[in-house]
Image (cartoon, rainbow, N blue to C red; front, side, top):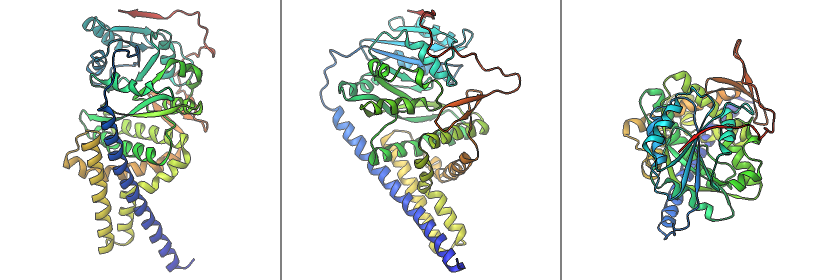
Length: 416
């Protein structure tokens, strides 16, 4: 290959990267506008609340997340006639236990159950917790929500409404990040508010949804039982993805609610930010390897910056970069502010291209290993999505209960 042809190839690759990114931004914007406009019109239709089904909310807990009491309190203040909240911990000395007892005292009208059960069925300890909690669920409709999620009083009414359609197997929703302070937390909040939501909205335009998001999942217990309950997911890193995927394989539709919940972030350190981002990237790569590899074509900031460097900041390269940066910031700000209601101030918006380059670096680092850190433990992720715990010297892994678990063991349950 001659020097000239090599130069042409490089220019072509850079041009394709920038053009593909602009197309991605455009689909994200029009996808958001179409989805939320249509959802608002649907929500304006009259809805009969007289026969709302009972709902059990499953909330696995471990430790004290920032603002944990206030986050959990929002679930207790639901404008919904009949619901139960089940909290689950593995350790009776977990500080989250005291938070649940406080909730029981201050919300006596709400049925709040606490399951304390340390039995482990696989390397995904959250799934073990959910399985232990599931046995005390009192209602047909289940809502699974992470501990750092904060919701409005209409949350249950809106998230269970699509289940009126018998063809819908699971309902999930987008989430926006609440930044509680610190630069690492700001970077992660920008990732959630300017990357995650647009990716979901683009995917909704170009493919049929076949996965769910762990921030919130609503489904019928009969549907969960159809896929074998929680235990088949006990060794998978992306339990939310595989739960949705298994339900979709059974012929059900997966619905994306127009509801947007809040996730309250407190990353704390750059190391934790790196761990979070690598875990997310390796989860994505493992579940959808082709999509993850191709996602580099949507990294417009990277392509525009490489084009600047390769062409030595020529006038044309500067003009192209300015166009890409401006469209990237404009679309990200519009989706964040107008559609998912995650306020993005101009100073934060100007940091979006810097954050984008960090995300591009994570994309590359993702291919340099197959380990993730989660909740203080390290795991190796296998090609089929299952995890194997990597134990440090002196760090004993918890003893696994034989699969399937015997049903005769009693749970330790405190309820009101």
